[in-house]
Length: 78
Image (tube, rainbow, N blue to C red; front, side):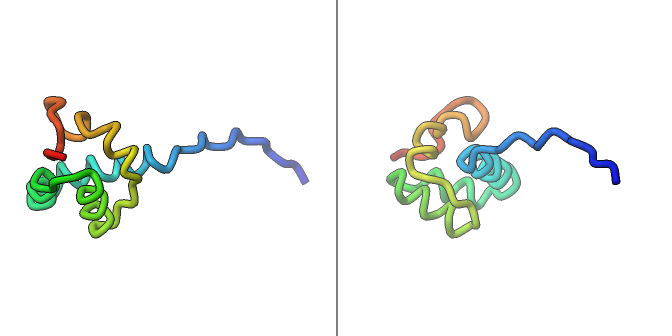
């Protein structure tokens, strides 16, 4: 029996995958995008993302708040 050693796929950092998922949700769901912009804190934004099936840490969300939507503006007020 011959085995083939294929390179293992690169590990994707969980927060990177969650942020990508969040970006897609922001682009596809304008109601979610509007609700996220109306949140008053990072914790509220994290909770809203969680309610929509995106598990992202408050720290990752805060670090990337200006890159989640086009134009580099903060995604929420908090």
